[in-house]
Length: 414
Length: 123
Image (cartoon, rainbow over all chains, first blue to last red; front, side, top):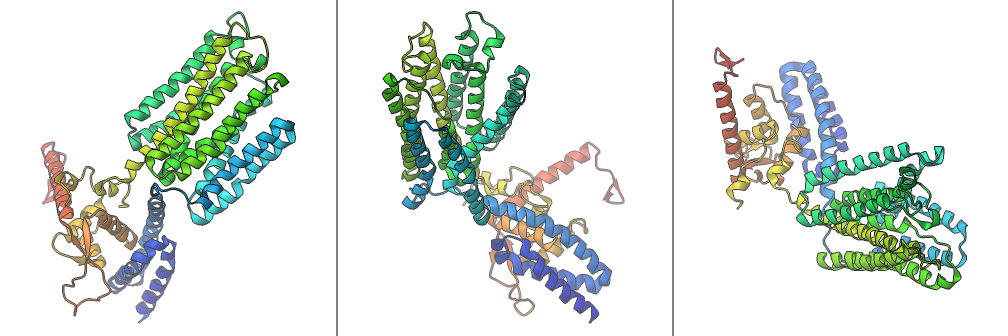
């Protein structure tokens, strides 16, 4: 009878402890597990008495901890199913459009008044947008679609802040620049390698990666072999941090392209849940990658029109097309067509600014090369965008792995 | 019906999955019976807890290696709340393929004199 009390007590305690398993798992197997544990208690207490029961508890606690963690991880993975390729409801689409609308309004106001306080308010609102995202993520265990753009904006700001810390502390130094660039490069390669192992990217991914890298390398080569800030080639001029006379520096090219590649890879991390909607995360990068120029009145109209066109395509039309698309094909077109229009506006704008046309300066003898640089900069953006879209779609086959792979040693607790 | 290639495990099964499949090879069983069978097969070396047992069962059901059955061997002797499981055709093919793989590994180990027996037990 004494053992009976121990068995009943053990059963009650185990019934409470198994509540740490995911709810769905518990609903399916909870009572069966309790039954098996009770059977074990009965047999062991009959054969070995209370000490045997103590050893059973020891084994059971280890088993419980190990498998509860495993089941929670499985529950998370199975929750990350690709959504049906269906248009997002209008109310969800409007939520997605909020960051872009705010950004567009602020930029339109900035074009008219050029008030620096608006920037501060904008960046504060970006940081504060993390609160509702984190809250919903924590409560629902799923990252919300409308949180993708603000998340991209927050990560971009974090990236910029980290990149600029050494320069703000000690001024520009080649060593710290090389160290940071190398660190980010290693991070990109590691993330890219992990994705390649998981998803075996298609030939299209390789093609767009190649175009992206080619455009980036061309920019770097232009900066190294063509130095607009000095008539003599020198490392110090090439690595110069300043953008005197609106000329880009090598530092600027490398920082921007490293950031772009890092964002392309990070975008695919959301792909298992949000499929190619996760490209919205990359949009956050382009939102915050701001354009600000002091423009002479004579050319103000052209510059403002181009800035407005770039912002309008990127902040409203592109996300709207992506989330309201009714098929994978139209979603892909929604990603590619407006982004090409937006980036063409960027190419015209930055090319014109650097060449001196839109600044109403006398065009320099090097203006054509600066326009070429702007075109390659834009090409790397477009290629990066399409690359991210292909990577997101490549996430699909991973979810369709065979049942045998599902019970591989990595996924089954032995 | 999956093709033959799908029936062949392309990675070794975990001990828990393999021994559960073996336990069900001679007929359907409920959870506790599977647990006792596995313990007996491995001379007590593999003692699964309820979490490991049902975690493996869940993934094997999802993988189509086993199926739940409503039939009871003897209703009078058993609790009807217990859940019984049986091997599927795919499960039979997988356990056979894994057994062949292990048998081949044992053969190689014997040829290379890795396995040394004393009184019928490997050292």
